[in-house]
Image 1 (cartoon, rainbow, N blue to C red):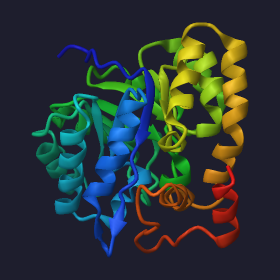
Image 2: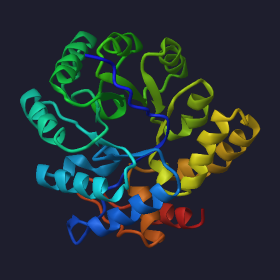
Image 3: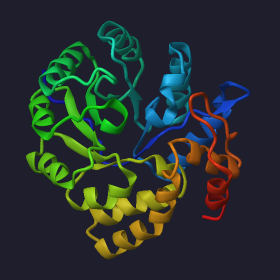
Image 4: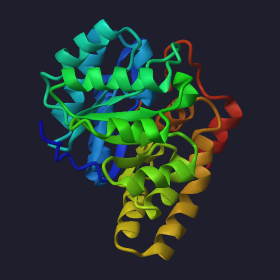
Amino acid sequence: MHRSELNLSGIWVPLVTPFEGGAVDHAGLRRIVVRCAGAGVAGFVACGSTGEPWALDDTEQQAVLQTVLETAGGVPVLMGLAGNHEGALHARLRRFAEWPIAAFLVPPPYYARPSQAGLVHWFNRLADASARPIVLYDIPLRTGVRIEPATALQLAAHPRIVGIKDCGGSMGDTQALIADGRLQVLAGDDARIFDTLCAGGTGAIAASAHVRTERFVALHRAVAEQRLDDARRIAQELAPLIRALFAEPNPAPLKALLAHEGLISDELRPPLVAASAPLRQQLAML
């Protein structure tokens, strides 16, 4: 096996899953994909945590992926793959690998809180079974367990494990992963995009980039071109938006703002509820 040449640089948008009357709103999803692709994003994530995958059955997830792939116009797509039943997860991996996705974005198994040795075993078995590259998703707030830097670097020895979405919260750990150089490191915490890019990170998977998308793209470009004063100015410009979009559980604020812009309905599936009225008013003023 040879290490994948997948390029994860740039701004990637982890797509919301719009709903209309309780069903997936594929027309709304297409509108978002077209707008973001036109603004120059590097890629999309279908059924990542912003896409409410826990509220989608397998048929709906497949339909979402199909819509994104058909609309993206060749822009690469990562497929979110989360779960804690190994057999079911591997079955979904095989099924979704039949689609022309660029890679899978995979968090640790939630609720189980395995040891670091357990994570190495889990991800290596998944990568062994995968026909597509794997991007690790370190998101302890959702899974209850961190992918420690030593564990991520141990997993980097697998040729199909090519990157990590970093929501671990430690800039020192982020810098250690970047310094090793084997994994492409993407900021997963939107407030740390500037810091991660300046440290040498590859890019970002940023829910906030659904809106003002061209400014997030410009931020990445400014850092890549070493125009750090410009990049700092853009990051400061985007900071109030990012704070507001994560003031309540994602993606409720984001869906409220997208609904305000007329792209989708402000609809989520339980257990999530719509953003509060004060936050909606704040978002409308940004």
